[in-house]
Length: 392
Image 1 (cartoon, helix red, strand yellow):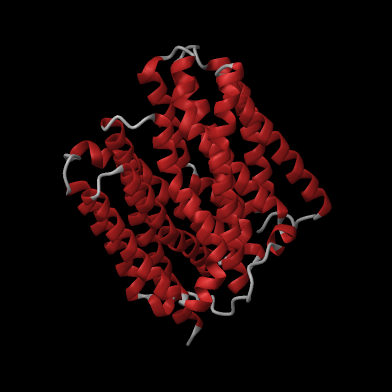
Image 2 (tube, helix red, strand yellow; image 1 turned 60 degrees about the vertical axis):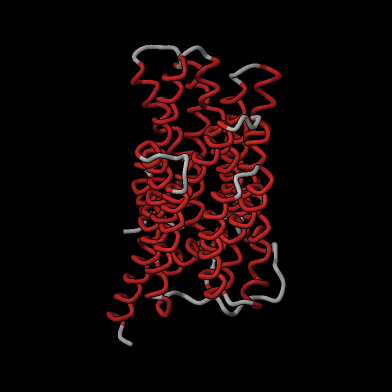
C-alpha cells in the first residue's frame, strides 16, 4: 500500500471515529439529564440521584482495568460492537423497568459497555493522528464529545420525555454510532499485542499526564455539579447560576481546538502548565467578580477558566499519544480514563463537604488547591525532562 493510500485510509478511519464520537456525545448528553429529571419527578432524594449517576463512572473504572482481559478473551472489535448493542438494549430497558433499583443495575451495565467505546475511541484518534497535528485532532474530538453533551438538554426540551420516545431515540443513536466504525473496521488500528497483565508502569513513565487526568476530573466534577449551587448561594439567582454554567460549557466546547492547536505548536507539556496556571489564576477571580458588573466580565472569566481546566484532559491525551504506541497506548489510555473518573467521583464529594463546612467560596478554593499542586508538579517534571523547542 502506498503512503498516499495509507494517508487516505487513516483519514477515512478518523472520520469514522469522529462520527461515532459525535453520536455518543449526544447519547450521554441526553441520557444524563433525562434520568435525573425523571428521578426528581418521582421524588427520589438528591443523594440517591447522585448515587445513581455515579454508576456509569464506577463501571468505567471496572472496565478500564479489565481491558487487557477483554482484548485477550473477546477481542476488542467484537467487544466494542457487542458493547454498543448492550448500551442500546440497556437504555431501552430503562423505559420498561422504571424502578430505582433497576436503573442502578442498568446504568452500571451500560457504563461497562460504554467504557470500551470511550477508551478505544481515544486510543484510535491518537494512533491515527499525525504527530504534528495530534493536538488539532484531539481538540476536534473534545469539541465533538462536549458539543454532544451541550446538545442533549436542547433535544430534551424539544420532545416529550414521559414515554418511550427519548429512550428509543437515544438507543437508535447508539446503533447509528456503530455504523461508521463497522464499515471501516479493517482500517482501524489493532491493539492485539496486549500484555498478559494490566500494568501501572505508564504512571511512572508519564506521571504528569496521569495527574493531569485526575486534576481535570476533580475540577470538572466539582464545577459541573456545584457551580450552579455556588452561584445561587452567592446571590445571583437561579437564572444567573445557569448562565454561569452555560458560559463554562460554551468555553469548554469552543476552545478545545485552539488549545489543541497550541499544543501542536509549542508542545503539550508547556500547554499543560498553562492550563494549570489559568486554572490557578481563575479560581480567586470567581468570588471577586461573582456579584460585580458588568456580568459579561464574569461570563468571560468563567468561559476561559473552564475551558483551560477541561483542557487538562485533552492536552494530557495529546501527550499520551506522543509517549505511547500500539498496545501500550490502549493500556495507558485505560489508566488515563480511570484517573479522570476517580477525580470525577472525588471532586464533587470533596468540594461539597468543604462548602458545607466553610461556605460557597470553598468551591473555587478547592480548585485553586488542586491546580496549584498540579502546576507545581508539572513545572518540576519539565525541569527534570527538558523538552525540544517549538516546531517549525
